[in-house]
Length: 166
Image 1: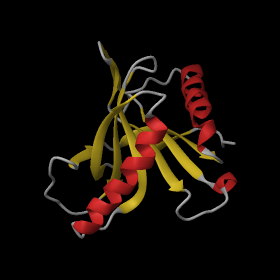
Image 2: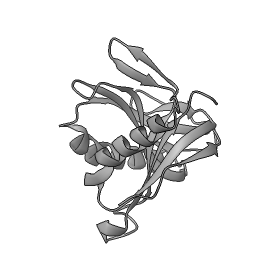
Image 3: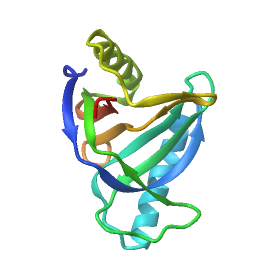
Image 4: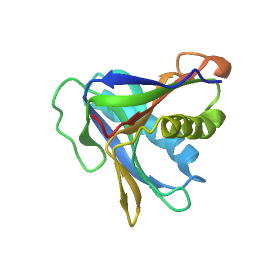
């Protein structure tokens, strides 16, 4: 279940992330392995995350590979290594849709957000490359998930895509 999409101004976010290349078939397994790895790394480096964990979609080819980052915001500079890297999600205008419920409906709600924006002639900040669409800002932010809410019907995920007008 999702609410209606809306256009919002969002601030930029500095983050730490584990980069991965996945397919639609492997993304769930990678997410289950790598988010705990990221949080163990943060704990071992005494870094406190700010905000909800998120997946940043850098390059998307739904039939091939997706280049993603499993990330969490931070409010301090942190020295990274070969496991975790730093990044910055740009601020600006985003189309945002809050999905409530299990993660199975996220793909359909991403499509719904894209259709909603297309019907309103909203262009996204992305570039076509040989590897797929490279997005300036596209994330799924896990606002309420399994760590804090045992009922998956109450989980909340914000889907956000940066527009070209910002």
